[in-house]
Image (cartoon, rainbow, N blue to C red):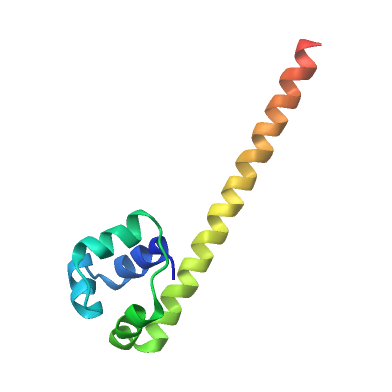
Length: 95
């Protein structure tokens, strides 16, 4: 799991970095680094979180993450298409 996904999961679960750090047996600074730099978080640190939330809840949160990422990509593509149309329109007006 990447750090940004971990942040999303913790937020959805209502957990603070400090709480997760205690569960994972790591320092808060380490958790902050994982999230800030979007680092890979070892599954060994995610397992206690998965157990705490139960697999069903954890899987739903992961599904929500995937849907949010798809929506971000959709919005990005929509924005790029709008920008490209704008550029084409400006070019046609300047000719």
